[in-house]
Length: 102
Image (cartoon, rainbow, N blue to C red):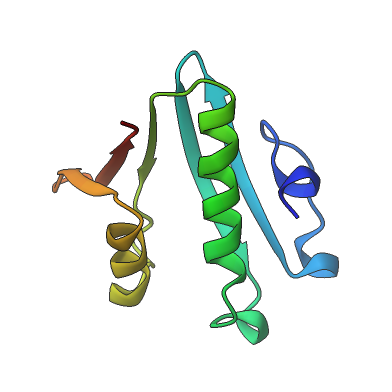
């Protein structure tokens, strides 16, 4: 699934496929910009799978951490998912989270 959607600001047909992940790797940091899942497909684990695949790919490419800014539209459930994946809030004002690899 990831190979089709993982890119650096690539073109994705969200309306056709129903989901996508937008991210990039810069030096040893992976930046997760956006995860999109159509409303009808939410709650099926698609977003979680995309994020886990993104993290795994970042590790394979030698990244030491993943960073992202929380979208103000994220629900508390979404935030709990990121916490369970090991992300921590580092800047409460700007809602910025990161995950470091061991």
